[in-house]
Image 1 (spheres, one colour):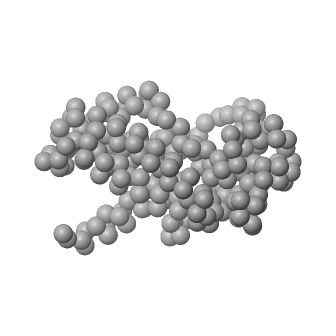
Image 2 (cartoon, rainbow, N blue to C red):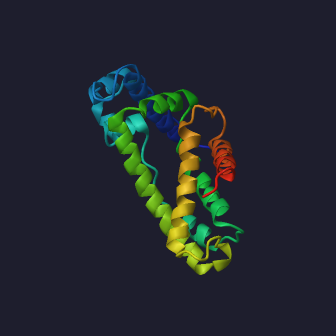
Length: 207
């Protein structure tokens, strides 16, 4: 649903996007280690103070801010909403959570290239681990209170939660970084597209 935002909020978003545009353009042209905050500020036409009002470090400007923790309303929704399976429920939660967290297509394409940098890849991996842990704990709690959602009842609920969280994590990872997705498409569509490919791939496997 499209939200009406104030002029002040629009200016805040524009400034943030301007900083991200400058940071990703410089790092894409050169490398992460060779670009300074001062250079990002100069290209964006802002002061250091303004930069740090929006980002706590160079890597957050380049990669984007880490995903925020789920708020209480999101947790309650996840734990109480009727569902037929944990994967669809988790995907819906993640779609809601990331709706406002992603940039325009040009910045997304730059970040896809930038993520190949070994230093930034480690930062991105740590972010994924932190978010996966939070998601996994929520899934385990829901599976423990609602046995009808279990697909692998022979396993501990925490183990099944790890499987669900891992599948959703990789679908999002593909949606953000795969060269086969169109960055112009809405993120939710890219996630569904990626999950379908994971599912199709797994169908042909046997152990």
